[in-house]
Picture 1 (cartoon, rainbow, N blue to C red):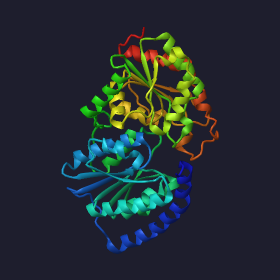
Picture 2: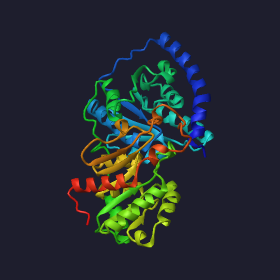
Picture 3: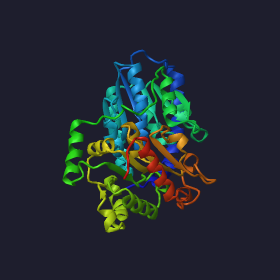
Picture 4: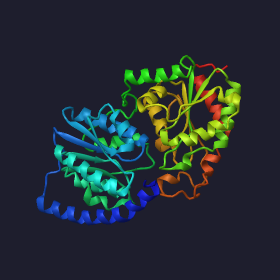
Length: 398
């Protein structure tokens, strides 16, 4: 299993070398063929590619929606990894999903070739590479043979200039929804940058969620979701276990009518269980551990059904925004002005030290894992935000 750090190392070494080589070749071919890169009126097939980050995949739904509005007769295919494939299938404006397996170098190589065969079979006209720094993603875009290839650039990814026909500056001082909508505007598309309405939740998903809650005897109780997890992309986004435990103990002691539910993906089960096991018996009676026990669809329905989610910066936070569930979100290595949700039903807690937001500028955090940005967030501030949001949505916690 390739770790995130190993993937970065491969991408920054072998990937960059291949990208620069392909860059020269692509420029020469472009000079010889002199292809017309104007935007066609009715492109038959469009590809949107995003390989990392559940939350980012949700946000790319903004681009997919804009493209469907601009080109209603076009088919939108989504290219991503297996880990993000299930959420990509839930995007309303995506017609097809192609996945690659990035769990190992050999699997990545083989499945990438197989994915390209599928891509070639549909002959894409427009290709949107939504990764910022990945040389491998840029290579995939080039190998697609799409006539028009769109991507993001910053100074550190100069190799993209020959691999993509059109580049959009990735401005970390702008919100991610605005950035993705800017990509759509390059082809004359536009529309809303809101997440609502992007994800498909079926009645079967809701039935599975209700069935699970019924089996746990919590079907008629007001639900507050607790998501303490951050993906491998940046584990430093986690709040400390001690703080989560202190928070849960106080909440269950003060507002005993609430039903709190700890959530997480199957690979996060052990971490979530370690938090739950350290709670007192009194708190355990009110806090249910659902981590790894729900299908993706049922989990989406659970988020939709809940009164509030308390979460760090992670994929479920952006899912909550997409289904209009209020949130209290905790931020540290990432600037919430770039990825947060700025409305009355979402409370952001952010107390940045000098080094924050490091994620926008470094592969490895300056603190070396000692995430002082998250440790600066007090239990009291999260409790206050919880009470504030519940009051705003006219829910009395007594």
